[in-house]
Image (cartoon, rainbow, N blue to C red; front, side, top):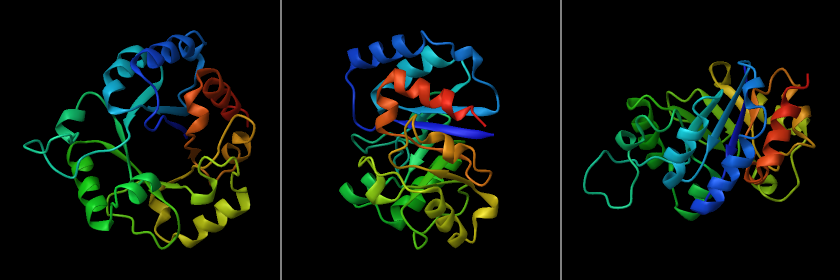
Length: 219
């Protein structure tokens, strides 16, 4: 099984999501094989819309975040209970959450525990071998800071060098994220020791995201 995880980040309005979904679903999505798991992670307000439109295809929905708190008086948070039935996966530890919201190991561990408690599969992001990975994580994304949104994707050799430093990875899927697009995705997906990719910018354009998926099928 290989993985393509599209992260929209905090982009798109309601009408733009409708347009994206209409364009994307005009393609032959039914031909995506079971051997490729496509996961789309839209902003929280659009989880239901995307789930409704894509549920008939081999495409799963992921949340971009989860609250460290359970359901209750925590205004603005999206809890695990509220994600039940909407998402199958959740991204935790993305570099932007660490940088702009100052999420530390304690917060990230609490989020992982909440996700696992609510049956969500964790997509845990790291920037280096020294980053703490909480217990229970089974999918790790290596996203080097200098490759995110810069167009300077990491080489396969550097991605594999990072993997060699992660001694706990025998039990984890290993994903690469950082300026992945349809022109370079094949070199990652062809490598036996890389389990998938997490594109950001490339997922915002429905045609580019579909082409990326198609290129991911080339072995």
